Image (cartoon, rainbow, N blue to C red; front, side, top):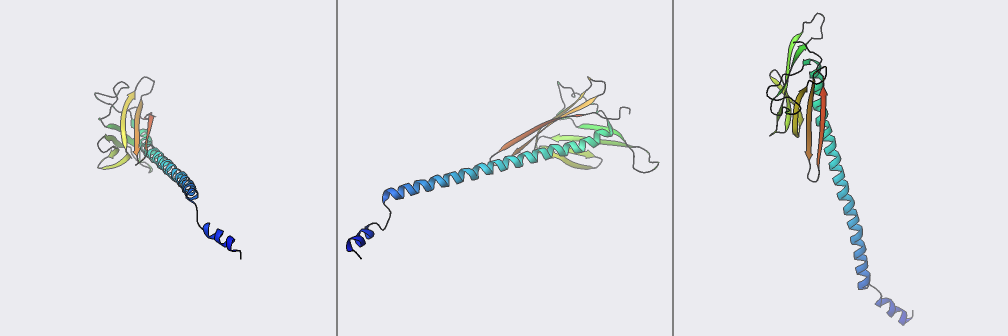
Amino acid sequence: MNPKLAERRNRQAGFTLIELVIATALGLLVLGAIASVVVTTTIADNTARARIEASGQVGSFQAFADDDFALARPPAPSGCGTSVSPCTTQDLVLQGSRVPNVTGGAPAPYLVRYGWDPGQQQVTRYTGASSVVVASNVTAYSWYVDRSGGKPTVVVRITVTIVTYNAIYSQSQTFLFSPRITAP
């Protein structure tokens, strides 16, 4: 082998400083791009989960309330209950009659109430001695009876806010419930 060629190969056995700087810069760019994708995906995932959770809480309230309003007459609020002054601290009380699903069953009185606890951020449904939280993470809740139409309509506004470590999502919903029973 040619001695000059061997000497030349030995001198070029490593990388030059410029090659190392360029390779390091390219590596940092690639790692930065990957980190950006991971962070963006995590934020999008948390936001999507917050939206699903908020929608689930609002849907839970609606499912319970739909059934209860079908059996009730409009509530009689005292001191609040108008569009100008909606009730926020007074429980929403529904009364009506429930007919058992048996032949010849007699209607029984039916009473249910919904209360919002701003400290716990939850709306609870009370029937007799039992209760169930029908919506949590509730940051705003109000209701009133709209008597401007021919039939009273109960308007309920609820806002659910989900906070994650890098996303906040709020969903507000206004429900219009028309109780079916109008006579006591």
